[in-house]
Image 1 (spheres, helix red, strand yellow):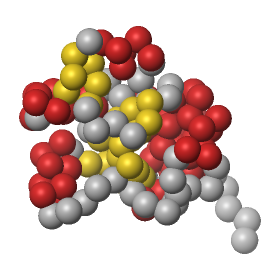
Image 2 (cartoon, rainbow, N blue to C red; image 1 turned 180 degrees about the vertical axis):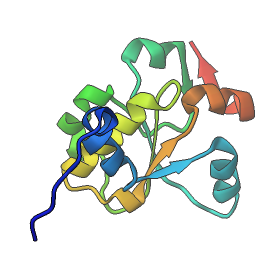
Image 3 (spheres, one colour; image 1 turned 30 degrees about the vertical axis):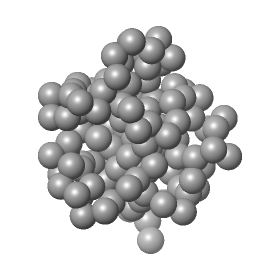
Image 4 (tube, helix red, strand yellow; image 1 turned 60 degrees about the vertical axis):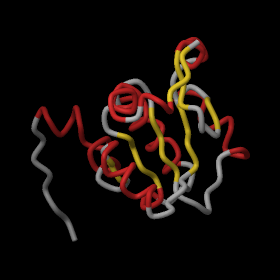
Length: 131
């Protein structure tokens, strides 16, 4: 079936990104805390830089790797359980989720933490270790 695609500027800027973005989950810190109370234990993937991690990090982080390098660590990132991916505010973690989906991870098990560690700090500061 042939179809004509009308191209708008927004399609060019966001085309592939928004299509992939719709295929993984976004979760607020409040929802994460609620789900955790019922026993949800996703793998915690911090995709900030080493320097940011040293300054402040979540005590229960399973792995820290920059979002650009996430695919170099797929052997250490499980693909058989939920992953909570976070950065400072939620942008790099979205990119990391897209990289993982391209590498074959199921988007339904990827959760981007809205607001990143900033949100975590405001809702559960006792879980953050500051360097």
